[in-house]
Amino acid sequence: MLLVVDAGNTNIVFAVREGEGWRGIWRVATDPQRTSDEYAVWLLALLGHSGLKPVDIDAAVIGTVVPAALYHLRRLCRDWFEVEPLIARATLDWGFVIDVEQPNEVGADRLLNALAAHQRYHGPLVVIDFGTATTFDVVGTDGAYLGGAIAPGINLSIEALHRAAARLPRIGIGRPQSAIGRATVPAMQSGIYWGYVGLIEGLVERIRAEYGAPLKVIATGGLAPLFAEATPVIETIDPDLTLEGLRLLAARNAPPVFSRGRHGDTEHG
Image (cartoon, rainbow, N blue to C red):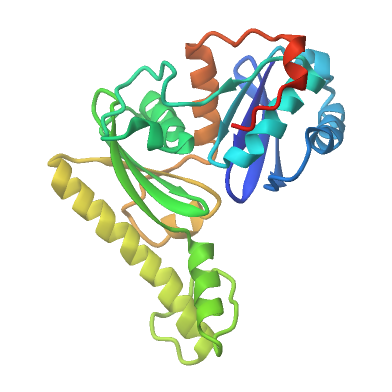
């Protein structure tokens, strides 16, 4: 079975793949200081609840945009599952061209989304990922990664508004009934929600105009359904897109060789 680890800025998702399906998908808040042993206590309990044992895991793949978390995640795979994880990097075989100026600077999550989206939906397309940042990534007809746009995530925007303006409260995200807020909180909710809808529609329109051809729009991330209900621009929601990208990447690349001697190393990236 394959252990898949998607480490984002807000959450880390662990999943186990067996055959054609997922045996389990679990989330924990991202904390770069959490040790491999702490991960193990939590994860092994969940595996046991699903009828799985550490010996059932024979391969692992990690995708992360949090370099500080990689060391402990790698140690988790080595010390508790005795596998050397494949780390998602631009230098691996992705099966497509990374057609940008600095391929090594592209976040692993963006490449993984591109890989999975092309496999499932074919190009050309735009992938919108509603995470800590909201990313818009363009995939060509042949699957080539062509770049995109990065905007502040919705929760970052809410937090920034609260912190920078002393009289504005912290609010939750939701779809307001009207664009004209008749009190402070409804006005903030309108600005955040409908402003973000405008961001989505405006960027997709500009991307389509620059690309010069129709583009399918696929959305992923926890807030994708909330915004998809407000705009016809988002055509498909795929909540497991990044996990599927990790699975596909592991299938394309030979697994690294596990060596017990690596347990005591000091690498941090």
